[in-house]
Amino acid sequence: KIIQSDPFHFQIIKERKDEDWDMGNIVFTLTNRRYGEKYIAYAESHDQALVGDKTLAFWLMDAEMYNYMSVLSPFTPVIDRGIQLHKMIRLITHSLGGEGYLNFMGNEFGHPEWLDFPRQGNNESYHYARRQFNLSDDHLLRYRFLNMFDRDMNKLEEKFGWLASLPAYVSEKHELNKVIAYERANLLFIFNFHPSQSYTDYRVGVEKPGKYKIALDSDAPEYGGHNRLDHTTDFFSQPYSHNHRSNSLLVYIPSRVAIVFQNMDIQM
Image (cartoon, rainbow, N blue to C red; front, side, top):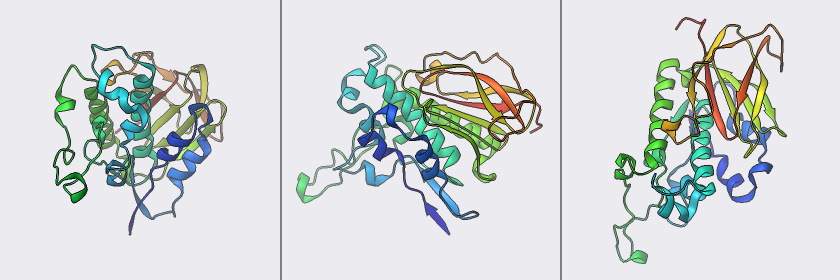
């Protein structure tokens, strides 16, 4: 039996300020399933995209998407927040939420508008019965950043196969720091949902020792990020147990960033 898990984020986006997001509730919602029962996780479904509701991107950025998604326009706080959270929400859903990932068409690049099929109430119009895939092809628009992140996120899953691996081990869900950390498929996932606080030498637990390197970074400039992480850095584990893991790393975690680390000492 395959069951779809509910997207956790629509409620907190609508009802809570960023600093009030509950890390424990996010993890619980994404992992609350019977062991061995396969779940399909999704960040957005047709229910959210239909007329009367909003797409995930539109909930995050709303009307500013019409004026400030051009790379020639200012990177406003609303657009910046929306782009960073859109990437983080997709990655945490993909890697923690189940054994399969469902992408509703257009969500991979943050489609701005709703779906509305021809009906009597809209004079049988086809205007919103569409997905504007041309948006992600335009190099002057920021939609391509979201699309490139989606592409590389899926490529990383194809390489490591976390959807087919055992459920993640969540070692941290820190409410004050807004940090979530977990291991799955020999990868370390770290999310910092704090809107403004970055952390230097932040200790994160890992079970397997070795040299770790960044495999995916939502803050990379090609994804519309702020390029605050050095991908040439090697992160060596220390035999210092932390959060019930045998070893640990010291890492720099910028605000509103998702980072995936690969243990380079494990043979693929």
